[in-house]
Image (spheres, rainbow, N blue to C red):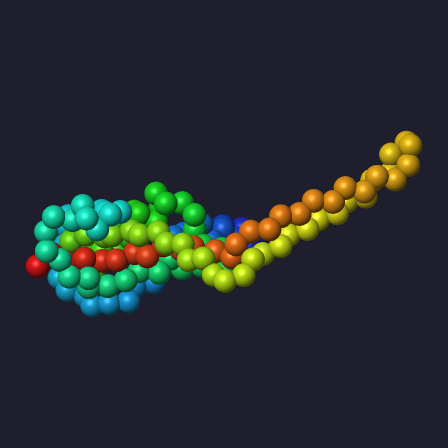
Length: 137
């Protein structure tokens, strides 16, 4: 019985470390070679966007931050879906308004009570990553 529990725990740990990309788009015959781009101006051939990828949440809603794993998974998925290239584009959108963060801490030292307060104001920014799957024309 202990062996069954250890297998289940190991399965959950490995699954939580896996990179998943949800794919939305068309599929054609699998391809062998997949080019990787981070700038659309570097693509010198005509192309069509055949799909879009969305990094999936893994383990408690966290999105994978390992760009190396994400790139490997995107290339693997591109081969399966028949794409010739993958284009990664990061984005940041600044929204109206600001975030205000404040923290206070009170410590009791040998000579009395000391209260420390700090704060910061920052713009509201949403960031993310677009993954485009391309097929050369």
